[in-house]
Length: 205
Image (cartoon, rainbow, N blue to C red; front, side):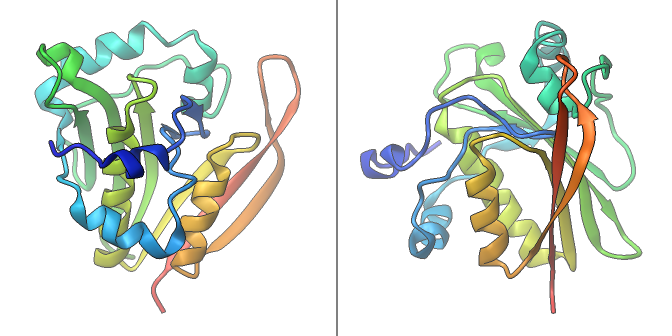
């Protein structure tokens, strides 16, 4: 995979950020006017997750009781691993870093979503980064999201409140004239604190 330029790399936050149902490298500091060009320069490295099923499930199983997995699941008592296979209208990807030496190390993330063919709507996103600080995760995911916005009538994704990546999602949604809604006190964290949830929606006119 082509490496991002040094300048582009510095524009990416290096934190491992949990985003409720999504755990991803934030792309929060990419200037709005440069985003499209930056995506067009990248070489997508999403591969069918079923090809790497055992590796992905092994990595998830090592994290299932962590705070990060709570943000991925969106509920503190969701302790099931994702079901990886072939299913109608559901796409599941392994995010690959081809520069890694071993196949196991090369699997740096998991990304999934579902298509409703009747409404042409993409939803039920799932995303996890296994490699904190690797900018390829954010790059490939946002590139795919640009593709989904272009190819489908609408997309919807959700985020647990309190995560730094919110600025990235706000910017992406606003870029495409989308809507942002808030569900207040929708769930609790493991300490019993109520947490809001954000719903992002982009619909073609």
